[in-house]
Structure formats: C-alpha cells, structure tokens
Image (tube, rainbow, N blue to C red; front, side, top):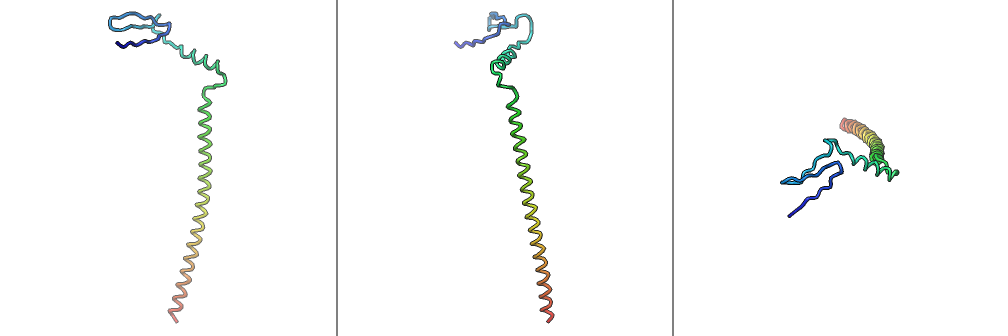
Length: 111
C-alpha cells in the first residue's frame, strides 16, 4: 500500500476523512506567505547576493555584443564600399580601353 505524506504549515488543521486526509486553512482562507519570510531570511544571511544583478550583467553583455557587431558591420561596410569603388574604376578603365580600341579598329579598317 502506498502512502503520501504532506508537510503542511502551522496554519492548517488536518482532519480525517473516509476517503483521504483533509486539510483546510485554520482561521479562514487567508493566504500563506511564509515563503516571503524565507526569502528575506536568505537575503539577510547572504547580503552579498543581490537579487537582479545577474539580469543586469547579462543585459550589459548583450549590449556589449551588439555594439561589437555594429562596429564589425561598419568595418565590413567600409571594405565593401572600397571594393565597389575599385570595381567601378576598373570597369570605367575597361570601358575606356574598349572605346579606344574600337576607334583604332575603325581607323585601321578605313585605310
């Protein structure tokens, strides 16, 4: 036969039932917020541990990474712009050379 044991706080009264153990809040339906006191005691015991710093540190790391990515993107854009300028200059030189060669071919054909 299996049994389930549940530890209830002092604000609960436990009674017997024919089908199962019955527990009801003592003194009405007031919520039990003992966990808040437990968290407060934990913070007092360990004052160096501050709630929320982990989130701030993670956020700072994310912002730092974003800034590094922006800087890398700007460097890549500069390189790409320079490559496009060089390619345009070479294309123009090729076009001018082609035009000059066509002129020379036309002159030679006319002789």
